Image (cartoon, rainbow, N blue to C red; front, top):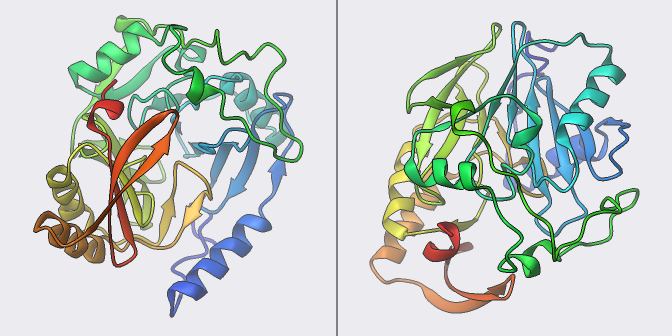
Length: 312
């Protein structure tokens, strides 16, 4: 029977293949909730979680609504290509929910995760000067990211709004007085469940993961997204994986692509990254959004190094 969060409890997966098949079945059978954006797929997931997925862009970004008994959390606000605020209102109407307290939390302040912040009155972040600057400056249409915004792709039933133009797209500035701060170890209490804030720094200086120890749930932002890491520095990644290796995770919600991915393998990843730091790795180069980045690979784990790109 489901527990108070809607979870069916720990899944007895014997192998990685079995885990991947089970999660694929959950996602393929998940209910889609109609909305008027034409851009978001809203997906009902286990544990009273709803994904706002943007599969019409190569990034396939996910923002997550986490429903609580006293308040809800919106973990990220997406790319800003379409209004997540209106899509959230569509979801509330479809589910017959009343208006209620909402806490908007940014997993970090890259352009694909805070693009919809101005749909809301407040946003909670890790207190970090780079993050504050990114939010309060917004992202002007200066041409640097045209190649990034232009990476649309086909997905059934999804289309960018008619007024979306990669050449002129911008993310509005968010008012400094509307920014609120969370600290490492602080508890976000939804009433029926509690999430601990985990500050991570390898992907961005302001990484903010949420971990529910009782229900074994992790929202890892872009720091933990499987066997491939996009980081500023290998040593910072090692530190983040030391923290993650102590977490008992059954439900791992991913901020890009499939909304649920296999249970954490942070201990394994940590061992691989330490070997990479010692020089045991193959090296290559990959291209993304018109830029080239070094890639380290070892035993099925890949690390893309992009310090300047990640702190634009």
